[in-house]
Image (cartoon, rainbow, N blue to C red; front, top):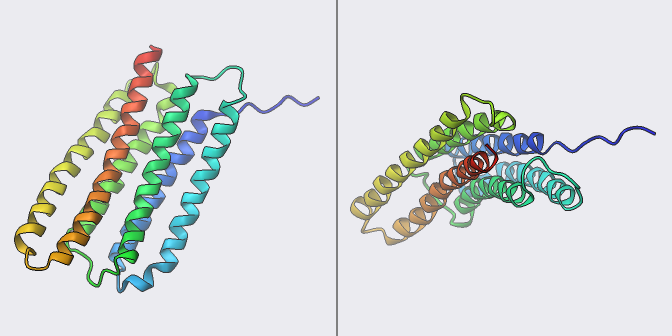
Length: 209
């Protein structure tokens, strides 16, 4: 009888972190190529395909962790980490959906800067995730986690800047202020979610040294 292939949780986490980078790439593409909200449907479909792929990976993780006799790290940590990674993908997709739902007519000049910061956060997290399976021996893992946190701090400062800009330069256009406050809030949550994921990884490190 052939030996049953052991489910690799770390491999699945890496696949999820790679999907966050792909989703961030699509967000940048949506912003740089923006013409009209109605034209976003094709890119939204691609974003949803990535989100669906992430859901399938999560489903496999949850199904396996429920029945595995022994897991490499605690079950609740596996579940939490998978959910945090899924949140990043969901939030990035949600930004693109908000462009469409709010029927924006003109892309905000600061949206691309924020999207690029989201991608940097996802890339930093992806690098950390590549090293995660070796967190007990790795000499770079802690610094990679710090990099994610640094980008989140940059996102906080950028969010402060763009929201103040909206409320000072666009205060006469209340709808624009409302719409873009909602969108930038969601973009900031993308970076927050990367930090939450990194913090979860850091906590797992502390619990297992």
